[in-house]
Figure (cartoon, rainbow, N blue to C red):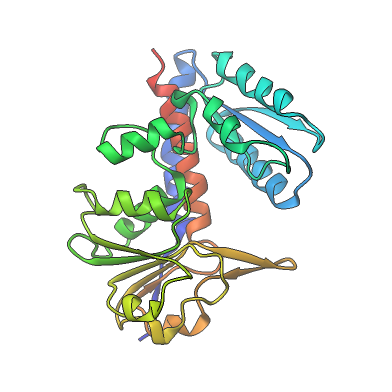
Amino acid sequence: MTAQLLDGERLAQRIKMELAQRAARLSANGRTPGLGTLLVGENPSSARYVEMKVEECKEIGVRSFDEHLPSTATQEEIEAVVDRFNANPDVHSILVQLPLPDGINEEQVLLRVDPAKDVDGLHPTNLGRLVMGAPGPLPCTPAGIVELLAEYEVPVEGKHVVIIGRGLTIGRPLALLMAMRRPHCNAAVTVVHTGVEDMAALTRTADVIVSAAGVPGIVSADMVKPGAAVIGAGTTFAGKKLLSDIADDVAEKAAWITPRLGGVGPMTRAMLLRNAVLAAEKVR
């Protein structure tokens, strides 16, 4: 068995084409979608991520408002930028790039973002909406994973999904989303982490494995049930090389697998752009 690749890059391009049409309609009516980005410091990975966002905004017709503060910026200076974005009617969504420098209260900064402009879908108000099943911006990586599984018709409803990782950006919201009674979800979900004994005993029962642990090769072929779908949502850099949570030998055991590059990452960015356009559409 050789796994079918879940090509997130191809699907993301199609989603962006559809978003470009929606953005063009908004602009024709005098409301160009606007995304405010805040980068603090000189972290190369963070800087590249924001740069990619700006490039993709241009591709689909979203106006980008970019603020870059030095690593010496104070809590008050950072929060002042968020306040300006909140007050600017041309900024419909806000991205605060994490991590923020040591000594900055990240939670306080994120809580300051207007929930209606929360492009990441991680404000407590929007996470509460997710818990309740109410409409709101969905966290980007979890939403992208669900879209990718649906695109390739991977069976999820009524199946067993094991998520490795319980972080705020992926594991916890993905578990909520995939357990909900909604299309391409409605699964039995188990959440594990690196401190769980005999994790393999659980993953071997999974129809879908999503690893967001950020531990290279944590999922190996002997942990996978034949015919399962395996999603690598956790990545680590070794120098300039990007390493996946999924070991290479898993491709010979699984039926579907994300590639090391071009799987979840492009889908995360596409979902962020979707949230940005949606925020502009909701303005009345």
